[in-house]
Structures are given as structure tokens and as C-alpha cells.
Length: 197
Image (cartoon, rainbow, N blue to C red; front, side):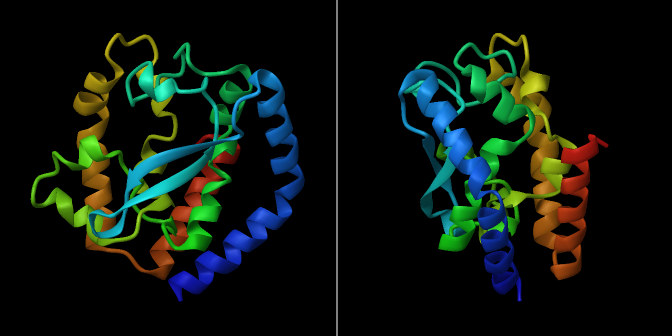
């Protein structure tokens, strides 16, 4: 049921947003000539690595020029990238990951390996469910970049201020999830994006 729902919704979203995807792709390419997509290495189900697709919102090779946690005022963010991040438009391409089966629409947000490598035994349970585009933690903290804004060490602030609650909410989903809960999370995510509440 969950996989069928993921496929149908992802196809609908990608088809309806296709004109927007084309326009965004052109704007990203025009800004600096770099690639349209950012291919991010993430850890997925059962500790497996996969490539997560996002519209590129930062300068080329940004991952080699700064921390993995990104503040809203990070100088690596491009002009079009700031707009895409603000309205979560850079996430649209992750529906490709859902179609491929790397991700689900709802599930714990996939992490970079350096953070999953320090998981405790309990936290490793997060990797027993397929990662998703949204979850309880995404609703709680929909603007991580704003929290990290102005910080000299975004990774340190992430570890101290964001990660503990994020982990707690991800484990909450692992402990109890079903189709109705997924629908609730999707509804709350859409509401958060549209009206910010």
C-alpha cells in the first residue's frame, strides 16, 4: 500500500510540476553554468548508500568549501538557490528518488554518513525504515538554515541544538507508523509549506 501510494503520488507531482522543473533548470544553468542537480550522498535503508537528487542551490563543489550543515546566510548559496530553499522547491526532485525506491514520501530524513556513523544502537533503528522526503522532524524544524544563521560552526550547533530533537522525532516515527500517520504527516507538511504554521 505504502509503495503503491508513493509511486502514484510521485508521478502526479512530477508530471504537474514539470513546467516548473524546466524553468528552474534553466534559471540554475543561466546563473553560473553549473549542473542543475546536486547529487548528495546519503545513508538509506539498512545503512545502504544512495544518491539523493536536489536542485543545486549552492555554488559548484560547495561541499568541499564548508560544513555539511547549511545556514540561511551561507555565502555558498546562489541567488536562485536562496529562493528554492525558502520555499522548499529544491526538494521536488526527490520524488525521483521515491520512484526509484531509494526513498519514501514519508520517513526519517536521510543523513550524511558522518552523522549516521555516530548513531547509538538505539538510533540505528532509524535505518530500519526507508528514509523519506518529510517526517515529524521536518515539520518541527522546517527551516534549519534559519536556526543556523550567523553561527560560526553550523555543524556544532546542529549537533547541540537540532540533532537531539530530530533523533527523538525520527525514533517516534520508527516506533509507530502506518498509512494514516503518513497521511497526517503529509497534510501537516503541506500546511507548513503553504502557511508556515
